[in-house]
Image (cartoon, rainbow, N blue to C red; front, side, top):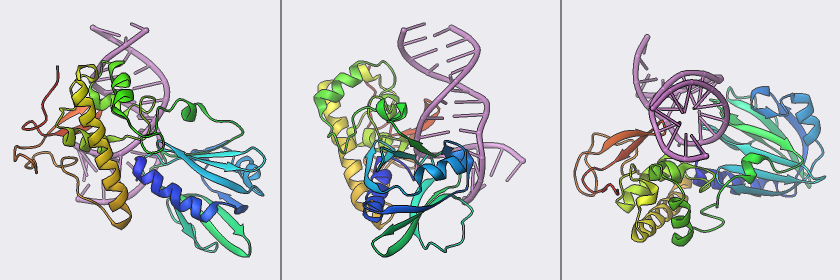
Length: 262
DNA sequence: CGGCATGTTGCGCA
DNA sequence: TTGCGCAACATGCC
C-alpha cells in the first residue's frame, strides 16, 4: 500500500468520510498496532471525539480530533483504511474499527493491516516520528535548490538519502527507484556528487512519478518501468535491468542509461 | 520449502 | 561521528 501517493489517497477518503463525524464506537482488536497498547485505554481516548481534520505528512496520517486529541496512523507495509458497514463481520487483517455518526448517517471505517508493521497512535501532542519528518513533496512542494542543499549534506547513495524520511517525507522504494530511472541517475551515486542539473532531473523524476501515480492509482495499477523488472529489458534503452541492494532494499536500475555520478 | 515484499528501528562494526 | 550491513518485527504470496 504505502508510499506518499497511497497515503494521500487514503487521506482524501478518510477526510471525506470522517470530517465533522463523531466517533461513537471503537473496536480496537489488536494491541500490537495500538498506542497506548491497551485496547480499553485506546478506546476510551477516542470514543465521543469529533474529527476536525485529516492531515498527512509523508507516510503519516494525522487526525485532528476535538479536545486536543490527535490520532496518528502509519500504514507500515500493508496497512489500509476502508469504509465498511457497521455490522460487517471482522476481517482477518482488521486491526481496528471506528464507528462514526454524522447527522443521521452511521458508517464505519476500519484499519486493515496483514503484516502489522503499521501503527495507530493516540496522543495529545505531536509525536517525534511526525515532527522529525523532512519536507513533504506534495504539500510543501519540491524545489531543486532545497533538495540540492539536503543531498549535499549526506554522503550516502542518493537513493538511500531520498528514502530517508527526515530528509524528504514520503518517498519509498518504488518512487525512489522510478524517479531515479526517469532522472537517468544510478541509485548508487553519492548524494553529494550530484550536479545542479542532476538534482533538477531528480526533482522532475520524482514529480513525474508522484503525479502519474496519483492520477492512475485510483483506477488501478500503473506500470512501473524498472521497479521489480530486474533481468528484463529497459523500456528506454533495451539494456538488461540490474538490481543491487542499498540500505537493505532491492534497487533496480538500468546500467545502460542510468550513469553513476562520482 | 525458500525467497521475496510499497517500512522502520536498532545494533554492531569499521 | 559517520556510514553501512544486517537482523528483526509478522504475514502472505509465488
